[in-house]
Every structure is written in structure tokens, then in C-alpha cells.
Length: 217
Image 1 (spheres, rainbow, N blue to C red):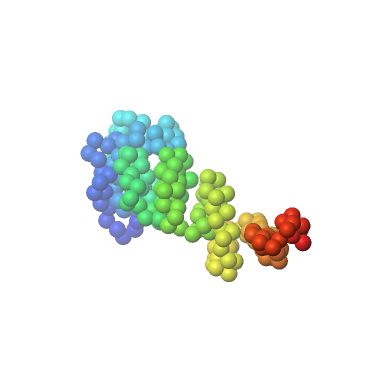
Image 2 (image 1 turned 90 degrees about the vertical axis):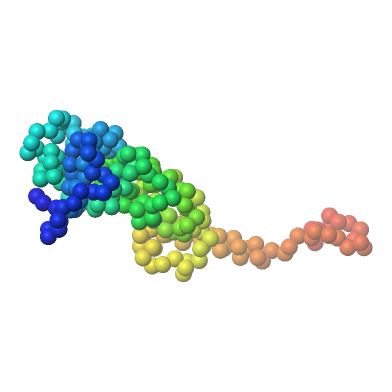
């Protein structure tokens, strides 16, 4: 197997660490990193190194050189970079974009990295006001994040139905969207009832001789 066809391999500018133990190829980028750091941060890598690729690596073994790297298919360079930032405790909360956080969540699901997942969720929580409630709610459903679901659903109720884009409605799913519609109808009915009620008398005329009877009337 080789990297991306037609592209020359290159050593990653940051994560080709000279004293690293294993070399990985992601797309056409070579990473030389420490097995211990990856194993501590990901169950998938922990299992990988417990089965094979034990140290010391001999020439020709997977991960031993740039010519014999461990190839990780179906993974982008950006995803692996983000994971390594977490694994090497170099994550900076002010730097990542929203798409970076989504990539980190996808990586955490694929490679069973609780630390990467926690970092991504904490970042979403700290920047939750940058997103609409329905955007956050779709993330809760896609990545199984119960922490945000209830407060986000409450905020969603404040939106008019026609202000929620069609693609978002489909991503929310049948059950959540129906629950939202049902709750909106109940609230609308309650608001109509309240609107028809006479307002309570706060002050009585100076000529009123029986405040209680006046209030009942």
C-alpha cells in the first residue's frame, strides 16, 4: 500500500519527531511519533501496539522507516494532526475552527479516544454561543452528546419553525422534530389562552369600597 497516488511523501513539519518510535503515513504525510503517547490517548492505538509493532522495530517492519510506514487509510492529515495535538497536550482552545472540532469528534469515534472527545466537547461548550441551538442539537444527535441536549432543545423552542432550514430538520430526525412541533403547539395554545384572559387589577380606584369584590367581578 502507498499514500495518495501521484503525490510525493513528505515528513510532517511538526510531528516528525526524531526520537519517535513509529512512522505513520496519512495521505502523503509521514509522521514519526511515540507509541506510548498514542496508546495513552486512544484505545485503537493501544490495541494496535499490544498486538504487534512492539519495540524495538527491526528494519523492514511496518513503522520502522519512511519506506515502511504504518499506513492509516481513510484518514485526513488534518484529523491526525488534531489528534496528535491532544495526545501531546499541545491543544490550544483559541486556535481550532468549528470544522476542526468536528474532525476531532469524528476521529475520537473512529479510534476510540476519550481524551480527544472530551477536548472537542469542552471546546463546543466554551463556544456554544457562536452556534444556533439547532446546529448544536444536530451535533448532540450525531455524536451522542447528552450534555447539551436538554438546554439546547429548550433554546430551540424560541425559534420559529420556518426559520429552521430544511436540511437541519432532516438531520434532527423524525422523533426530535415531531417532539419540537408538539411542544410548539402546546406553547402556542397556552399563549392564546393567556392572551384571552383579562389582566389582573393591580390598583383600585379611590372610590372602590370593596377591593375583594371588585377583583372577583
